[in-house]
Structures are given as structure tokens and as C-alpha cells.
Image (cartoon, rainbow, N blue to C red):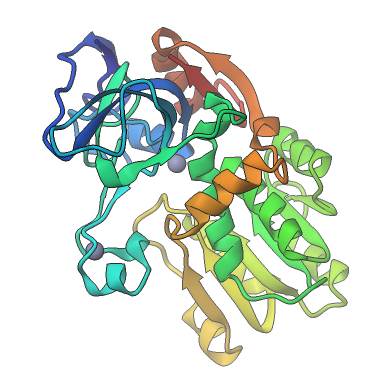
Length: 338
Ligand SMILES: [Zn+2]
Ligand SMILES: [Zn+2]
């Protein structure tokens, strides 16, 4: 089979690989659609330290069952499916508390197990969900990022019509915009430095957009919120500058959620958190939001396909990821059809 194999910074050639064979509890998926995630692009640059070569990336995907292990009786060849890329133990305190996203023995397809930039991928039976007939494979590949955004919106406390700032207008930032609007936010102010992304945010419902490269975002948010700051801020970039900025954008006693995950160590102003009694939360992955996201797409409550600006083949993916990593291409979401 063909697969994109990450071999080190800026190296991910299309290679011939052996097709995976199912272990007893595994299902082999013939990949039909896989989204290119910003975290894969960061991983491709070799800066985040989470993806170690050699690895096949790709964790946002759907497909068709092509083989099942001897113990698997709930899936059969030909079933349309969508995959939850998180493999969790099911028995640790986090799993038992219904928070498998913080499982103590957590693995993720395409991060520390071979993922879906390939014709076939082996997954544990517990990761497989049925893809309803009316949901396309490409829509199925958007379930995972939508679930990530919905989780951040779910765990961020704000009341109806309160003001929310979202820093970052990439895929997750924009899906978070759709999610906080669904949850009942008032003003939703999106901050980025890329005019294309900001225009996109406005086109899908941001009430205000701020280009932080051109204006002082803190001053502008204060002006938009009666000088108090936003009720809640969600950071979807994951670097020092924006993590710090999130503290200055929120009101005293407000809620800040960090979902961006790019720079491992950052420097922040601790006194802002202590003396203004801010609540700071991390948001990672999702729990029940995977099935919520799938249902929201099936019921046409949300159409995440509005973010897909380019559809490509697996053979084209290596060059596109290289272009995205070098800033030569600016697509919000690229979908690989296999
Ligand atoms: Zn992702
Ligand atoms: Zn666990």
C-alpha cells in the first residue's frame, strides 16, 4: 500500500509499505478521507516533539472496514466507519471517571501509532464508530476536529449572550467559533494575524474580528466589552505570545481555556492569574463530544465542510504539507481523498 512516512523534519515521502494485518482485537480500515491537521504540519517541522520518526501521521479520518481480527464480531467488511483516534485503557481513574481524553495510558493514531495518511490503517475495535449513510466520508473526517472544538466550548464556562474571544482562526479556532455560538455566546470576537482567516471567521459568524498584527487586540477587546474584558477566552494557537495575551483579554474572575498545543514551554505572567482570580483550563481532545459532533453533522446542525478549501490525493499531500509548513499555502482545511 501507499503511505506518507514521516522520516524527520520536512521529510515525508510517499512510500510503498506492507498492508497491516489485523490482530485479534483490531479492525483494518481502508481510508477514504483524511484531514490535514495543523498539528501534523507542526509535527512535520519537527518542533513539537510529539511525533517521532518513522511514523505515518493522520488522525482525522473515515473509511470502510476491509478486514477484522478473530475476536471482532461487531464490524464486517464494507461497513462505513469513522475512527476516534484516541486509544485509551478503559480502566484508569480518568477512564473510569468518563474522561478518557486524560487517560493515563493514552495513545493517538498518527501521533504515536501509525495513522491514516495511507491506504489502510489498523485500529483497535473500540475506536470504530458507524458512519451514517447520509454523512459523507469527508464530513466523517471532520468529526474529530469538530469534537475537539466542541470539547473546548463545553468546558469553558460562560452564560447565554456573554462575550467570548477566540484567539486563532485555524480549523480548530473556527470550529470553536461555530461551537460557542451554538452554546449561546453573545459577541464572538476572533483574533488572528492572517486577513484570509479573519475574513473566513466573519463569513461564518464571528461578530467581530481583530487583526493582532495591525491593532492592539487587548485595547480593542476592552472597547468591545465595556472596558471589562471578555467573559471567556479560548486560546487556539498554543504559543507564548497568544497564551499570555489570553490573560489580558479576559475580565477579572473570567475563564480562560487553552486548547492550542504547539510550544511546549512558555513564559507567562502568573500575577495576572493570581491577583485577578482567573480560571485557567487546558482542553485536550474530547470525551462524549465525538458522538455529539457526528450527530450534529448528521442532523445538519453544523456543516464543517465550509472550512474545506482544498481537496487533494494522497500523492499530492506531501507537497501540500510542505507548502503549509513553509507558509507557502494558506488553506484553512485540506482534505485528502484516498
Ligand atoms: Zn487534529
Ligand atoms: Zn485510561
